Image (cartoon, rainbow, N blue to C red; front, side, top):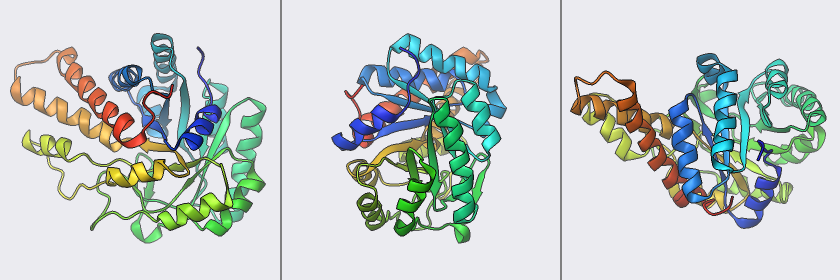
Length: 309
């Protein structure tokens, strides 16, 4: 099976009241842990590459690793660009085998966002690639995405129909209270389901995306602190809220920080218990295993996409 687009995945997810997990990848062990979990749970996958991951690992290596995951598992897998900020970056990814790209022009005024997004959509659709865009601005930090709390803005439901109609975009990331990174909220996280409901009314059947949706699993934060790290004030989105969103119009939920925390917790634990080890295969095996455990939990208990491949 070759890499696929998200079109059929999202159609089934919308109708079935679940969401597809979009997991950020940076190296082989992370990919292996994710796809091993998905294979056991028979779940479709979106493996997404950020600008930071491209710089770190080289997109050619990541593409071949993702293609190897398809060959190994036979699962339907989308290769997606996360937070592409220019037409040129999206174009390069399209020409290099990505089946889905995100153009994030949400930092621009509404009309400029439409103009940039439409240009990407036209080029992508000519090449059989689907496009995600963003309307509204999430606070937080993730790779090259940095938005101060004061600059964050909820998505305006009254703009979504015009935006989708004029751009022809295939899915839409909206801001309803999630936030990038592990240091998300000073108080209890709250999602604006009223905004989500209004967006769904304006765009019936249209796939909605949530960014900044890691839960900051307490177990991993505790492990990091137990074995010499520090994560004061790390908070995420409660998983029951994400599951509710997945049962509504949200068809794609992005997960990155939880993977990073699982990876780091496993490595810290390994070196604390085995201080003389120096073989990367030893500690990366532990990291891969905890990534797998994390993803299986997400697929079953948060996304609800297990058994849907």
